[in-house]
Amino acid sequence: MPDVDILIVGAGPAGCVAAAWAKRAAPELDVVVLERDRAVGTPVRCAEGVGDAGLREFANPEGAPWVARKISRVIFIAPNDSEVRVAERDVGWILDRTRFDAFLAAEAGGLGAAVLVGTEAAGMTPGPHGRWDVRVRSARGETTYRAKVVIGSDGVEAMVGRWAGLETRVPARDMESCAQYVVRGIDFDPDAIYLQFGHDIAPGGYAWVFPKGVGIANVGLGLVALKSDGRNAREYLDAWLARRYPRGACAGYTVGGVIVHTTVTQTYTDGVLVAGDAAHMINPLSGGGIVNAMKAGRLAGCTAAAAIRAGDTSARRLAAYHHAWMELLGLDHLKYYRIKRALEDLDDEFFNALARTVNAIPQERRTLGRIFTHALVKHPQLIPVAARFFM
Image (cartoon, rainbow, N blue to C red; front, top):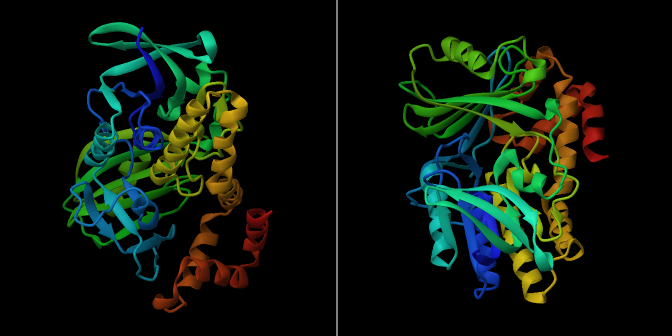
């Protein structure tokens, strides 16, 4: 039975960053990362967009081979197709997730962590001396790892959290269904991301165009199934594409789920931490989770390493991780969740009117803060939304 200090389930951004930071904090520890797929970073199940500032906390994107495109503009599209262009600034990047995740895994490996692909955690039970026994399957057969701390970074399935007795269920209204194609031969601003709202387009969510280059983009949408007219996400996406980009050539279809909830009420227990999507650490307003996952992974790796060095991996000790996360981003996510729920109650005409109001602002002054402030003045029905945001 292999005996390790930290066993990480899932080699996405949260897991690989957790491994890297655990090794930085305590190089003497044995850190193992399990990835059930045959390669890190595949299949890709996200739109691949990240903000500039958050990304730079972990890697320099300038000239990196894992960057597909730099983005300097955001274009919001109202339900009636009117566009609102936000002032140019350093907005963010579109990643090549396969290469980016491989980069993070290589960084963890370079620091001494073992990253095992094609290796799946199949179950977990308490072991002696506060450790966990994790049953693992691979092409080589089945074995059991004994770990002082297990970090669950296993995505929306969140099996580690469930095995450890944590509450990780998601209300149906807070799980969005997503569909996406890679689309070629379409016309758009390659330096901008496009976000379109509308009940007939993506009820409870939005559609997006994230450029991968000139004439090629990730085009997809996410919706709340409970608000749909019976069609699934792909059917909504096909209808939107047929109307907006009828000549586009679609390839690379992916489908998945995105949690637009708040952080689980407890992200820790004796010898266990959960991070990233597994702990619902996604921005509930935007659905973005890559940078959040890396920030959570950094906290988880450092917390686990410090606990092992101190000889105390109890829930009481590991609770520091949860408190640090809530202070860093978790409390903000509570606010974003309130505003998301309030926005869901607004109809398409509200967003059409808001677009008209915002387009009256000179483009160079259209920062998101100014847009929101101006909207409160021109559209008093937004005031309850703002009140819920700050409560």
